[in-house]
Length: 417
Image 1 (cartoon, rainbow, N blue to C red):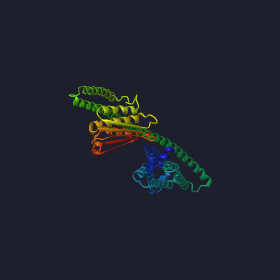
Image 2 (tube, helix red, strand yellow; image 1 turned 120 degrees about the vertical axis):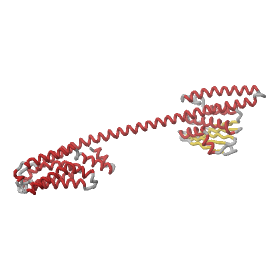
Image 3 (cartoon, rainbow, N blue to C red; image 1 turned 60 degrees about the vertical axis):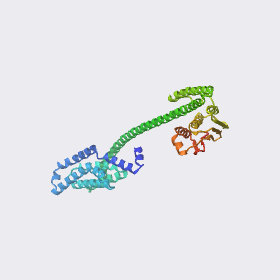
Image 4 (cartoon, rainbow, N blue to C red; image 1 turned 180 degrees about the vertical axis):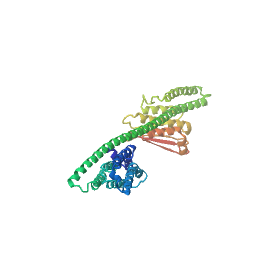
């Protein structure tokens, strides 16, 4: 119940919802049956009383009319006021009509000798719990006052108090019983609400899990695509260069041509092995058994064998080896050399790797033909893959190029990524 109150206090809409649910508990079939049953129990002794039929006709008709108003309003009035008349005074109008009907019944039958009519105050008192405790107290005291004024106007004070205490005890018992029933109903509603919230939360969690799985699958596909491109693209580029060189010198220098073809064949075998590992997504890192400087040195040597002048400059030492950082830098150099061999028509490439306490910087620059920056960044899948790797490590990548001014990119990674 406390939890329900806290939830209801969170927003005005929740207060309205709680109030409507509370009123529903007083307008259900069970409540209507109770009101009808008590109304009949109160009316039957009156109808069997000769003193009642001895009254003037107008008083008999008015009494029966008050009884009908009490029953109709008590069974459907609250539902009508709360559900269809959405105004602030609707519940007060309901209780006003009910108390007025009750007053009419009490005063019109006070002289008939039928003492059962007072039990009709019990449903009104119980229904007043749908508002608040102070409202219930006011309604209950008002009903007791009506009974005293209708039935005991000429009795002594002490006798009236004793009679009112008897009726008040029945009223208090009804209020306690109704309050317990309301708490049990509220607890059941709260359990149902929590079960619904839990079901909705599980549904949302399943949706989030599916989204996470889809995102993880997409990232893995991108990673495998980058691996295949970086490896296969590099090896095929170098093999193509070696074959082109062999074709050029085949006539005049057959031995050198054969040597170039042998290198191309070896690179083809290495590329096939790398592709197998990439496709299975289980390929070991090219830095598994060597440092980044050694791996970059081998890439530079392969480029020199293809006819490029490659200068490598490494400054400083890493504070500690980070496999993700080293692999990203290695792939950046590999992609840069591949692009130089494919597109740049360059004769020289400068590679600079600088370790600093806060960051690591890699710069690769060639003296080739350059290109338009927008076209380059939009068309090169390899550069996009490198940039994705860099962003995953919270780094940044900058490209500087222009037609006939060479090509340069700089990768900067934080020391702790």
